[in-house]
Amino acid sequence: MKRGNAMPFYLYQVSYSTEAVKAMIANPTDRAAAASKLIEGLGGKLHHLFFAFGKYDVVCLIEAPDDAAVAAAAMAVAASGTVSGAATTKLFTTDEAMAVMAKAGTAVGTYKPPMD
Image (cartoon, rainbow, N blue to C red; front, top):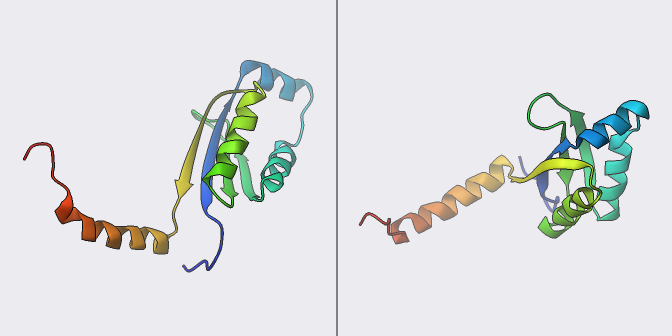
C-alpha cells in the first residue's frame, strides 16, 4: 500500500502508575483527548488509543513527522509521573518493509559474522 508523503507510524504502549489508575477511577477522563492534544501539538496525529489487558494499559497508533516528535511526546508523558513503563515501536508499511528487504539484500554479502 503506497502512502505517498505520509508521515511514519508508531506504536506507543503505556503502563500507568498506581497513582494514575487511582486518579482515573476517582475522576474518569478522556485520555484520548489528552493524548491527541499532545501529539497534534508536535505535528502528528493520534489515530487510535485503546485501553488493553496485559503488560500495557494503553496502546496508541500515532502518525508523526519524525522520531524526535514521538520521543518528545514520550518524554512529556514520562515526565508527568503517571507511567510505570512505556515502549515505542516505529512501524513500517509493507512497501516500506519491502524496500528495507531489498536494501538488506544488497548488504548481506558485506556482513562478516563473528564466527568466521
